[in-house]
Length: 426
Length: 165
Image (cartoon, rainbow over all chains, first blue to last red; front, side, top):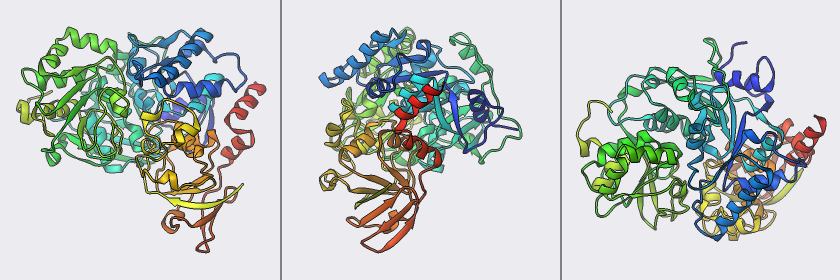
């Protein structure tokens, strides 16, 4: 039977010849992880399940990334639960501050996920890894505990919608703009329970960093997973990193899709998701001029080296506006190191940006850049719900790193071309 | 299973950030989390909710983060059930896993008003509005999810699976 890439991966992991949308399957998982917020709850449930240890210590990771370095006593207590569990069970893949980064970026970088995997994380942005041709999905803590105990998880096979990007991106348009444009079109539940399969000539030119930012936000359309078929660039990225063998799956030419949509990517100009929904998408030029109190470049969506390079291109030789604050948070220590070597950190410091160790902090209004009543932030993160980054009367515009950097320079929501001038290509 | 209680009506796309803001995710305790439930949606809502009440929501209830703290906070308030046009997928699984009954019903949201007394039958999917004497047809709990519930929730299901293997 012809199948999509998602269906093929799930069938292989359920040990059956084929699966169809709507079917409930019992599925083997290749790797599981939890973070400092979700792990304590997962550990509590795991300990009720009557097992002596995790299904395979080499296929479990814990990454402390949300409230680290611990912001208060309560968050320190939560991290302590995870640290003690890891020690008691002798788990090898544990990432604490200094070595930890934002989990989705870190775990791909460290080679824990590759093409053909079923990868499950107690964090909704786990769908990030679909850019590698993996089936990756977020679950809650209890489901993660079950997967940690059994190495298996029940799943409903999702219907797949295929999105084909056509054309070559204009300057300052990124993967972030592509996924926001889709969410703006189909809505925040437009792909609910489904698989989003991304394809098309536009992707050929995109770096892995930009591809990750597309699959990363599949959950913002309600999807179970976002996925791309691996190409040469994917394999070149994965091969030196991956700790396991992998299998490349592709959708059959006659695979059945619930829908097929095309996106005229070549016509797109940078966009923002205006408050307070990732589906509230408008071109930057339409929202330009809004006064901005803070800009934030970081997160699992856009805290990668390409994002920092783009921001540096805007900030080089310029200053952050005196009425605006700029936060830059490289997603992992490796990205931080690379940014340092490339001179990007120097550019950010000279511009007057605050640079932090890796943390999810500001994205969730947790710490390291919480917004006050009435403040506006241009953020490279993935969510702009009411109160997401602080006070319930604060507002967040989601954008790419070039837009966030340009807005930091002018103190108003700004198209990067208006700061730097037109680029031939980025 | 049948649940009866007073309804509190909320809108579409209620996300897990407004159900329980991340700034409070430094505990997994239901009572502590309930103290901040729905704070960024409507700061007065949690005071109006009495144990046994039912939340009636629009589309895509529970969108966003995977935090299981969201259904835990709602259950911590004593909410007996959530009836929505649709649920975000991670929230839906989490609700079952922590024992918060949820039901999909296309029509209830448009008809039920704040304070109406409704009765939700999870086996048939029927929602009866006692105040208005109306009936709305919802989706019975899917067979597989009912099996999970019968097994004693996810922990019971895992124990049974492990005993089999």
